[in-house]
Image 1 (cartoon, rainbow, N blue to C red):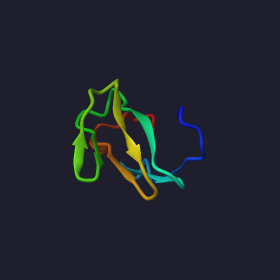
Image 2: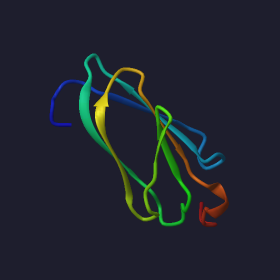
Image 3: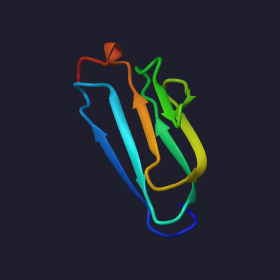
Image 4: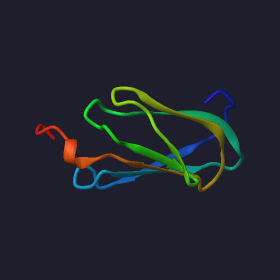
Length: 88
């Protein structure tokens, strides 16, 4: 990010057993950050949720969330596991 300062992002997931991925933010001050989450081509129907607001992005693209993040903010990503290619 461009505002300097420390930002910690922790990913919690059980992927590929589950399609749920959580990103938790940690920082001492609110910071404006543009987060880009890649949506794989096979992941039609993926949802990205922040504070009950759902974001959508086309498969093969990126879901962009630009906001002021604060300590404890959470991004919940749900990938539809029924479409996962066999090589996983």
